[in-house]
Length: 254
View (cartoon, rainbow, N blue to C red):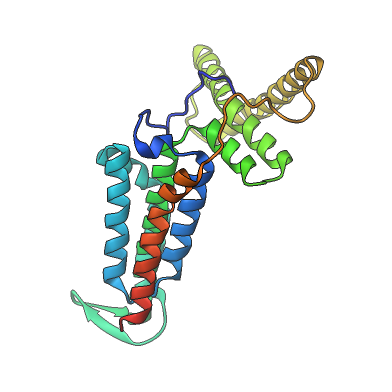
């Protein structure tokens, strides 16, 4: 990826969270999510404390609340599934607002909503405070296989290129009077998808040959030092350590 390529999920800033090495933030978020998942669903107060911890991180990183709120919409399909659980789950029924709902379904819905939402918010904060190319470098620092990181790098870099190509094809169809009004448009759209695949494949071949001719050996050159000091690891550990205390208390308190 070029140094000037910025992803729309990234919120530029110079906060202490932004300055942490990417591998530190990845480990911290992963540990936090695992601790949230390990929390008993009956510990409702614990999930409130987890939300407070994430709010502190967002405030420290200066990520606007509205930005997080807009991006959390991605979990809407899971929310819809969770709302259906009390109606379709088996078990003892209880009355809620005049409706007969499954008690186990209500607990299951709460479990999905609470843990899923906290995990999504943690991921949103990670993406908002870390550039995608640095995230990939951090994953590589954590000994992820290079083949996977290279594939992810090219997907990230050329996803926008393919999307732009799709937009140009849409404009070309519209300029020729095409409108997808009914099923008859499926044939034209299918041909467009096929053409897009062929163009992307041919572009990939040309890019690969160009890179090999310039010395590409399967690994992208590293232009940023993403090493982490003990102080930075300690700072990143603040979130999972606080979450670990909450998790422990949730298991101990009936």
